[in-house]
Image 1: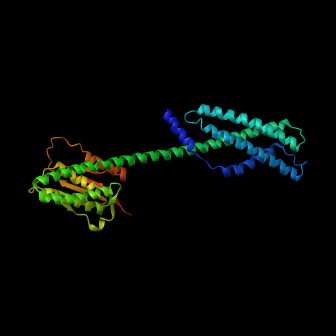
Image 2: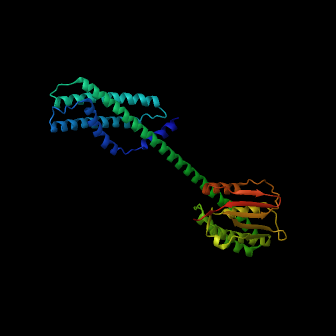
Image 3: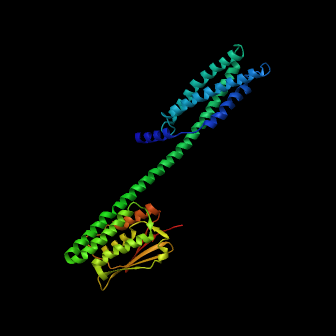
Length: 354
């Protein structure tokens, strides 16, 4: 509960309203209207200048009453709010407004009689003016509180949206960070295998690995990259696979070259799918793993033949789950996975550049 109160207090304290125009119009308005309605100023017996100074005085009363109650209202907001302490809020407002407005109004109105009416006080008019002033103050306080409540709701909505955005960005960053260890672990295993069995190709693999990893570091902070960049990266990654598996892995890209610069995709998406296919399938030179990539209706399809490998430990599915979550956080879309007896297909929604 304390955390909720603190959060509400931070929102309350951060609210600021620009009421200058409101005050410039309504302070003179009430300062003239109330004495005019109650007959405080006797136009028949006063000269023009007496009338002007009389209304200037009543506008001063309006100014003092307004700003005194405004100060009380703003001060009480730091102690009570409508959501957590509504009863205390109402009681404190009524008491503070009453104990300030009524005595000050009576005192200033009596002063007006001493200045403009020779000290002869008409208590009926003083009482009527004080009552009308009190009613006007309650109305204005209601308007202020309504404005504050609206702004609090707007501020809370904005802060909630900012919190959700920050949370989504943190989740996306965490998902991106999961890519590097997975990729480098598999690559080092491959390099270790080549050093022992094919040392000549190990150097070429090491050079290609540096280029591929350079792409990962350069694009890790980006949410989206051009499809051409991602496709070039996939070809570089596939060159690593060809060094190890030779003709046992093949890739067939049917995306027209002109379309590669028309779409955006989260970086390292295609490498995740290629790696997933390598990890879960049996293949050799006679029965190669063939990955086909095609683009149709803003959907990039990655398709491979399926010959499931018998793993000693069941798959956690973290690669595809990671990719799906990154896709959702970045594009508000999800990938589509379809598995049949002989084929495995993943459909990636790509964003068209307008």
